Image (cartoon, rainbow, N blue to C red; front, side, top):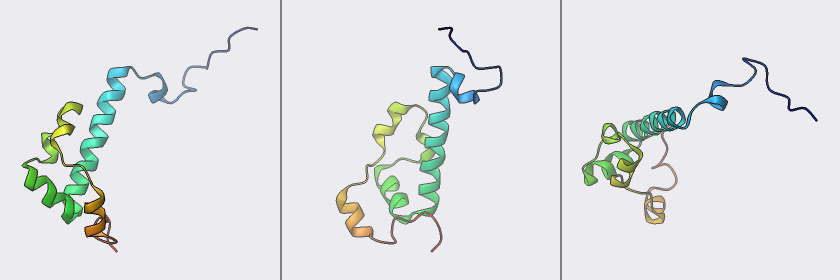
Length: 88
């Protein structure tokens, strides 16, 4: 049975991206998410500030270890509206 190959332009660019291109895109999107949380969620702004980190500090995936993780306690203390990143 012959192997069928997709026609040029048939695949999304991400499906043919290199590992480095995918990692770069993931980092860009993660940085956006951290910035959005910092700008719109008081809990995350406070948590980042207490750890001494800012979303712009994320330059590589290994930098993520410097950022605070969300714990059950954080969720309990900020439930239900304290973690929203959009207006009510």
